[in-house]
Length: 166
Image (cartoon, rainbow, N blue to C red):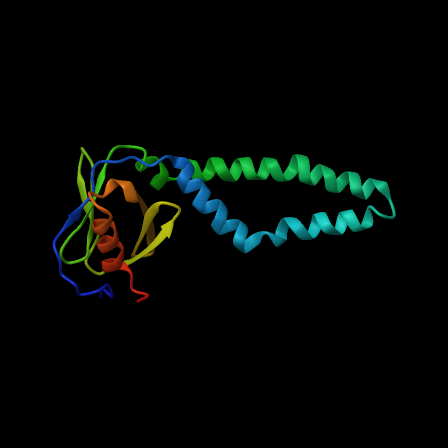
């Protein structure tokens, strides 16, 4: 069951583009930090408060801030940049929004079209349109820079045809 708009317009195809893995990592970082910032803040704050009575707690808090948390962030960044979607987006490809509001990813080696019953959502991240396709428990994120569209009007139509929040 597709819940996307029934506006069956023309197909919209982007020019070929590639997306740096750092864009995927930045999205993941924002998503994770907005949910779990407290997991780092509470232990550090507790140790700093205890550090007011014993300097060793303050040193432990500083070790968390300057050693442990950056190491955790580095591993998280590496995991996000080596994600399958991030690696796939490094190659030149283009997107096509078909008249039935399915998405086709066009790569030199193949064309992959989302199933008609997939849940497709769209959002904006910096100067990119992010399409999230969920089907049978699998989620795929496709990032398309607005500059890949022929015109701003094409980018706006692409977004609005998939935007179900209107």
